[in-house]
Image: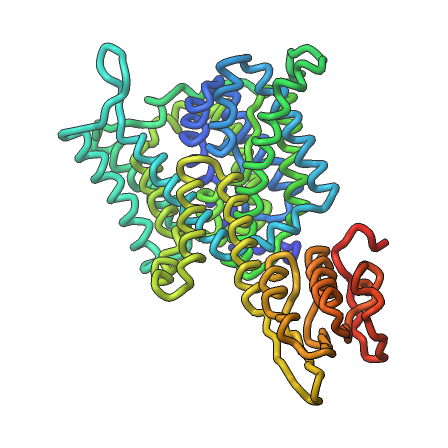
Length: 507
């Protein structure tokens, strides 16, 4: 991407950055409530994450902040040990992510199967949608649990949400001079203020005024016990954050037909969380919803994230009383549009067209994303996809039988011989019924692992017990080294294939 900014890009990125800042405020407040951490810790976490990842990250335009994926993990730690242990866990989380980047492991996210990616995206879209439903709840008078809005209050909320969404969808038909999402939020805010419409605003959730964040080393004992306490949380936090970040990066790559740098982004995420933990902040990860807003607005430069960070700090220091007047309905309308644009509606057409197993894996990943956590959902999807691939690949093993001469039979093996196909390979032969001389030709086959070697050795032993002559043709040199019973049965030909086997005994 070129370095120079055009005037149009500057305007687009600044305006989109301002909108993202407005959207992040209630998100950070809501996630702070979920994690039961101080409100300013969540806002500071949003500031540090969006600033550091925007400046140093590998995917300009992607938005990182305090997120639900990290908030839900912090809750138990916060309730049992307190906020200082949360800060310590965030520091360790950042270190883990930095090590992940140094080891250059981020690239492996690109091998996540498409059905898993779709399940993650659709599941996260549902999570974003469900999180917005909480905005339709209000405190019960006199204290107690929240209850759903009803009557005029609910109708006003729904009407303002619809107004926001209508502006966002219709404005591009008239002009694209300003981001439609920002204009949708501004129009709704203007209507509420001018007509004195009674509705929930940002200020009803919390007061945003605060000071500049200051250095604060987590006040926890430097002991093995502390590490024992925070390490499990830190690893889960790091896994959740990295999965959501890297899959969001992949999605933006697809949407923009560009290529981000996953290892650089992981490093920036780690640095952001490391700094957050030392400045009394919660850290976080990439946010799919807000990132989609930037993509929709074509705000794909670092300036958008830097603007968001600056705007967040200005809101905290100086502009809280104005931002507190923004109706929650306006931000809900923006996020509902994000949900609509995020959900892969085309995936619904796959039912009945793709293999049922692939569809089931995608649905399972979506369900786990909604009800459990992102890291477990994606890990489960990858494992099931790998097992499904192995099963399908194992069924592609074939053998052609040729009887060229009396008393001699040739088996020509085609396909891949590995742990999943080893048993079916053995069942394709009948030493009892075969003639005296048998030749097994592996020219069109590939031996993958130690299970395949054992299957060949076992087969050779079956023929030897019956006193029959067996020859193994076109095996690679690794096979001849690893075989035991069948080692002496291998022939050596100039056209023997050259490849390597996954086995620890081969250096």
